[in-house]
Amino acid sequence: MKAVFITYNQAITPRVMAILDNQEVRGFTLFPLTHGRGSFSGEPHMGSHAWPSMNSSVLAMVEDDKVAPLLDAVRELDKTTQLQGIRAFVWEITDMM
Image (cartoon, rainbow, N blue to C red; front, top):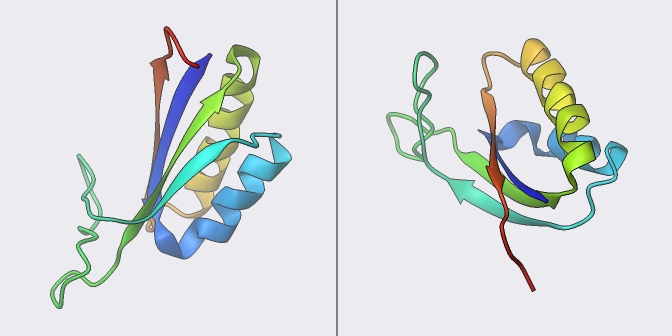
């Protein structure tokens, strides 16, 4: 089992939710308002007068065999929304209840 953390410009939330549905990722936690900025490029998303955009983030628990297809779908979305910003990170889950 893996934890996949996806953070993105909240403007593309419907497209991220569609990816989760299409990839049959049912269980997730949505953080609707998160602040941040990219490591290399893009404008900060801080919800301020200077930087009004905001991010949203999703934390999903995903079976190992679903991780690669999910990341591929996120990469495809990133290609069409590069100015919006989206990143995904994967962690190993060692235990859960």
